[in-house]
Image (cartoon, rainbow, N blue to C red; front, side, top):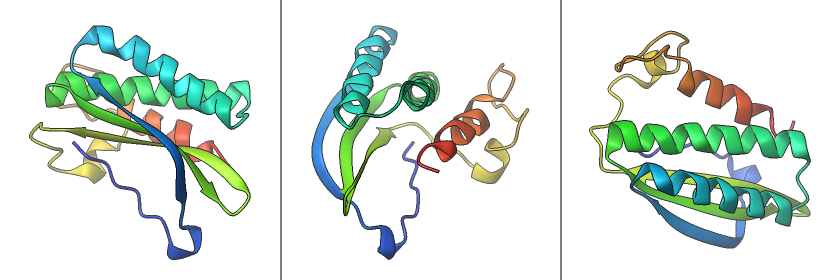
Length: 130
């Protein structure tokens, strides 16, 4: 699964540093979380926003394992003019999400879960930087 977020041309970002990690087994999630934390620390992100981003990253990494048989995660420090941020890109070879709009609704699940992971992940990261 690759999740693309549209970035308006007025917000073009420059990648300052990056690291690509394989997440192919459950044991890969903790080192991945630690690396995300290192990248948030690089830009001086506050503890609350660090926690939100790391929580969202963990959820997406676990979904990639559960539904996409693992994959890769790209962690970047990005810059727009004088502002820095972190961008995470997840890619796997799974079947994909048939209906993204439905998958982003609370309570929807194709597995045996509460169906809160993707919607809550979006809420966590959409708050960062506002």
